[in-house]
Image (cartoon, rainbow, N blue to C red; front, side, top):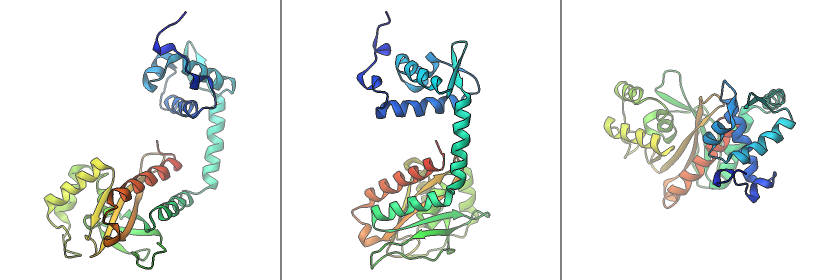
Length: 268
């Protein structure tokens, strides 16, 4: 009889429909998707930090639906998984990415009460462009026109996008761009801007106060697609007076929604 913590089956594991079991099934399929070869139960256990007994029960259930198959004691995706993948791809085609992004923007606008923007970088890499927005219902609110452009360095969205680039690319950008004040407190020192971008890289979001315009606070985090590519920056823009005292809250909400939108686009 097997013994030890690794082989103990918990009450949650016996309940096949528990949230923990659902999460484990997803992580299990993702691990098999990421592998070019069949994976042993012991290796899956190590990768997912999950008891072998729990994974074995899940694998047997998935095998019953042909989602996985066993080969010489190891596991790989089965024909059912590819059929499911095709169905999901077709559903994704019907539900366009832009709809998923806009749905997330609406959610964020409702949660924050502030204007939410989608910002992308141009091909030259020196400016960002607003390509979509959901406007706040507040009488006093930030407003911008779709198609308006701003420099990367002065906006939260621009800094969040710069944070996805290599430090060398950021340095190159700061050397070639003409750093000009857009507001009284706009930062134009290359060293300070490089530090702000690095901080955004570490935090997973960028936040600016009175940088692109006086009285405007921006908070941004990037959205990624299934391939890991950057789709754009999700931005909450609010009057600075109203944003003070809730900067951490805005950062948390933006990061959470950017992650949720990215997941809906297939990013893992």
